[in-house]
Length: 194
Image (cartoon, rainbow, N blue to C red; front, side):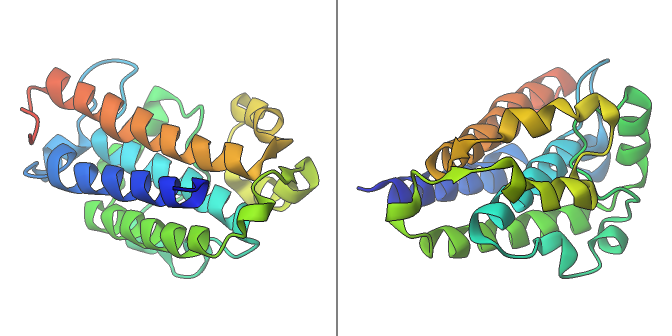
């Protein structure tokens, strides 16, 4: 199994678990609930993860973001195009109140599908290529970082290989949509959909 095959297998696994076990069977209010101070809601986690995945795959595949190909601001009923890194509690609360759940879920599906299509087209010989700051710059200039408090992300993401970014996507999904989401379900008293 090569790196691309491994990535696609992990991507399919996390998508299946997220759709069938983490988010399944929850009501609209449960998806919007942040069970305690400093914790994110399940719908925020899905949106945030999809936004970062959209950005990274766009950079790796030299394509447009899924976000830019349809009127996702309207469909998700949000006013921000960034990924939500360093949002305040007040901003998260406002997001949870206004966001359209179906719109976020549709965006997540569209991003997931595009990710699989784009990664399948990557040349395995380019996995060691370094993604430079210059290559990331258009995405950052396009508003992916919404707060000065999140500017550190630009330096943190710069100058890693394509394979590092694929690994980041797997870990980012697992961190937020499996680990953190299951914690939110537990803290909120929503039994896991296992």
